[in-house]
Length: 285
Ligand code: MG
Ligand code: MG
View 1 (spheres, protein in one colour):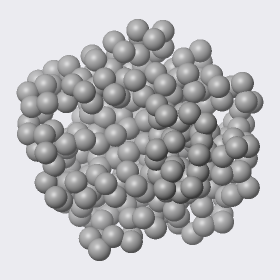
View 2 (cartoon, rainbow, N blue to C red):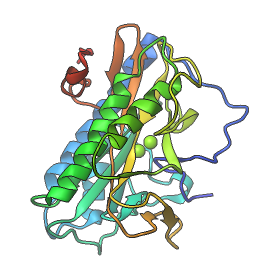
View 3 (tube, rainbow, N blue to C red):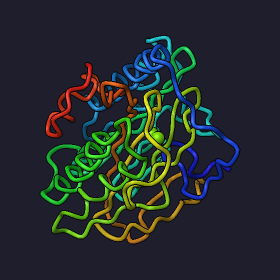
């Protein structure tokens, strides 16, 4: 089962019979605690990214941070996964396995995906960063991926429908002059007392469909964008998902709660204040 089950849920996963979990305001507060642990872990890993550091070392930094906050790394042991982060480099899209023999080099792009459990509640988030200065092409790829995520987060609003988020993500990507690919075999997910819950969140599609967005719903929104064709291949390690054509990919993710006051980005240190400002949204911090 392992492959594809870690951060980005496979499109074909069957969720029938499972329910969308609606959290109370208090439970969302608890999820904020987990989200801040994840935010801190990703910040610590990000600060350690440099030429020569191994993805195994980065993994240890994340695990140390998570445990120092009294939380549990949710990836570790998940269907047999051996890391506390996924470390996916260059043409690796998601689910790269941390490796003490794999050192970063200048110009690499690394996606750091991390999850933690605090008091039974989950947070899940990912960023992509370049080791050193990004090329213009890498900078543009990373920028469009992050912006598409924020556009999706901005639509995590009560009264809307699930695919309003999907559509908003897609619109940002297709508006670019470069023909980026949107990985369509993986996407976001509900999150709460489990890392992966209903509903699956596509990163494309027509708006106005799917479950209605209501306060207490929490979602992980996670676009994966490629410079070239978005077709994917899973490596023989049973986890790492790469682009079939070898083109580079980027991945961003935040966990967001729909509240009566609007989106609250639980895995952003500032609650999403900076990222949602361009949309005229002021979440609680
Ligand atoms: Mg993730
Ligand atoms: Mg996820």
